[in-house]
Length: 162
Image (cartoon, rainbow, N blue to C red; front, top):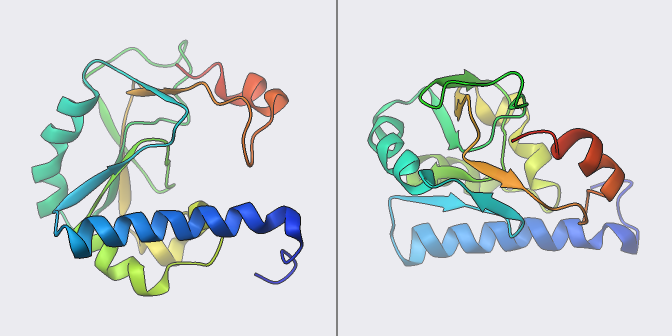
């Protein structure tokens, strides 16, 4: 990506290729119908797996769904209460999300060399489809240090989301 050739951006290229490689293995080598993608700094809710199991048949048959996520960017404790409420968003939420073989087959040939999550948020990638998210998060990120997050950002924006 032009302007991001310096060595300090190398990790973004490695992360994108890691995701692409893992998803190719899941869908092309193992021939699985869908995958739940998690980062290593997530704590999961007790109903995390049943949430995705319940959503899988809906996701697989509804072409208007881009992905299913366990994360709600607006999941501040004071704003959420209904553990059964689901919503749609036009923004790719990441942080514990499910993708199926159909969507991956479409995305795989165009997978970016870097900044995969920014790419997933582009309107031309989602193509009018929405991501399903819970009102109450099914994951919590405790990652206050990382490739694109520092403690200040995490404390201000991510820590309050429960």
